[in-house]
Length: 76
Image (tube, rainbow, N blue to C red; front, side):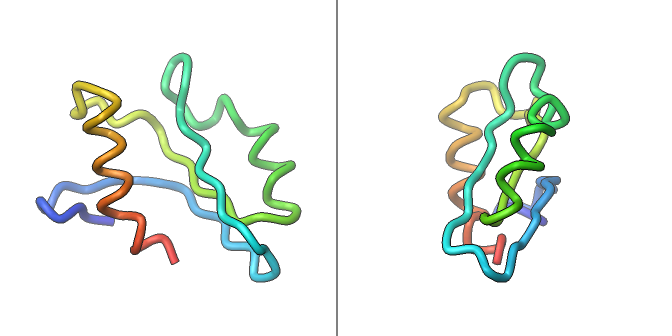
């Protein structure tokens, strides 16, 4: 997707049509979403899941959180 400032924001989204909740798996450690693959596989059984690699252009977690929030309406 593209953020309001026009910059691309890559993510993975598994939409589970029967899910009653969507969770976001935040990248930790080395910043790769692949590190949470086991959690992703478990959660998609009954939830929709959004995950992404750490976006290096954001200098702080607050900047990353604002980017996620600005795009949250596009994950549907």
